[in-house]
Length: 344
Image (cartoon, rainbow, N blue to C red; front, side):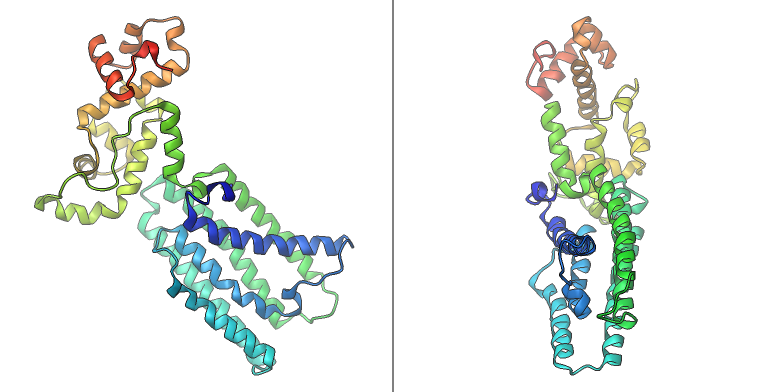
């Protein structure tokens, strides 16, 4: 999934791919050793300080996952200190006690930094949008694994006696592997995390052959009276449009006889003023035209289910709540470029 979707959602997938590779190789090496298929000790077992280089990768992943600015060359400064600490430890400039303290402070700092990012993300978006809830649960699963990794790394540095048989490493791998399995299962069940919302929705549009009226960029200059509202909803525009796009695929909602701005606002759980703003500056259709689009979406769904196999186009028009057969034909042709009887 990661390799297939990397070009669609590169920001998230590159750091996540490195993390999975790092975590997976560790467990693969450990399993081969335990099965007596390979007599090889991991570099992190003989010199745990190497793991400091990978801790910032977790930070990069979480920053990208919540939609912050993309990781830049400036962010690579996070990798400089680990390299310095590794060199100092290798050369013996840091004593055992100082090394343990430095390792603990370093990992604790990044753990707190990642936690603060998740908390800010929760406060900013969780209560508003379905995708944010999916993404938040995913981040919590990964954060649980990161916390476990950091805890065990500190245990290794502070308590573990190297070159002695210690079953704690096996226990750690078993426990953390269960958490990783849960996280990856959640990822498979929610591919929108990896592929990105726009890519998956574009596949729905291609499948339904439905015209999309939405624009993430404003289609006209914001009027002075709407500037205050713009500040409130500006960051939310992509999520609002995404929810509206998904609604066009919601068969249960489309079956309702009366769809209007109020019912739409209630369904999306957003203020009516926010909805009007999105339609005014990010939609190529008026409210009336958009509801006709929803009716056409319903017609497409019914045609796909074989509605016209034993019923007439007039019956389809009535089921989709159009005022007349002529209005139905006109709107269907407008949004699909085809007549209902020839649509496939």
